[in-house]
Length: 325
Image 1 (cartoon, helix red, strand yellow):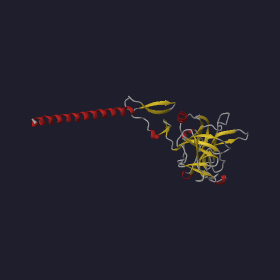
Image 2: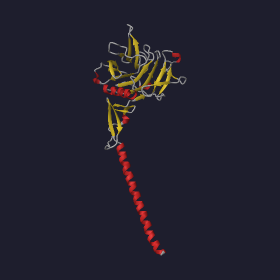
Image 3: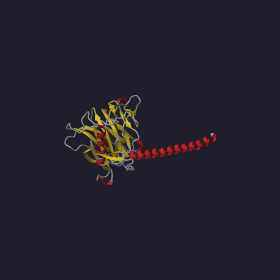
Image 4: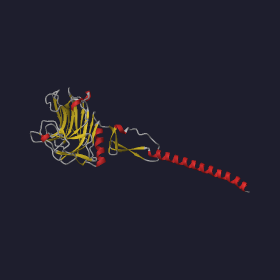
């Protein structure tokens, strides 16, 4: 009897083991298929419009589709991917640190000398348009590192809020040989001035190139020339078209000044001849003019001219992201 019982039990045990292995394999296959379906559902991009700005959002239950936009080559503001705006060549977002920028001062605030880097003054930050902005308290400025010569078409945009403004105080300045007046000096700047009649004009886009003996400015074309008030955020953009089709005279280009994505002035500007080896880019400071108090955020520079729709896309995305007005 013992031999017969043992002969029956062994096949039964083997059968049970085979069934368990088969059940485990079926369960694993079902789980793998379920995971594949889940991944396919989550990978589908759906476009949502915010004006000209576009953002991709994942929704389940749709067939997988490859995104058409390479996000590494496009601007992203908050969670918004701007499919029609190329990524800026130079960007400075701050957000609590300078990154590719350094604090600079003029010793004893003496005019007529280049600002010098210092470790004795610490940068200040306050609430910005997106994250924290850079606050200049009137004792220092900032040099933006890595900026290249802007001798062809270009676009510069930044958010700006002034606590005070003086005539010719430099909101932004980029150029080379800044002290070589009448020689190799070549630069662009944004600032404020007061006319002989006592009228404040702000912002003004200045360009000077000594080699071509060019000095030009683009100012607001509307009757009310003071377009910037204190303690309010503004999105300032300048575009320069140096192409042969711009219609500008010899040695010049066409310049366009925008405020909150609206064109407020246009005119011919100097065609610049910056020396690539000696380019300087400053916020809130220059070699000569009076420092002031202001906050900056999201400084972007493109070595090409953006269209009005692209400028509007940037502004709309920032407004939608932060609620800045």
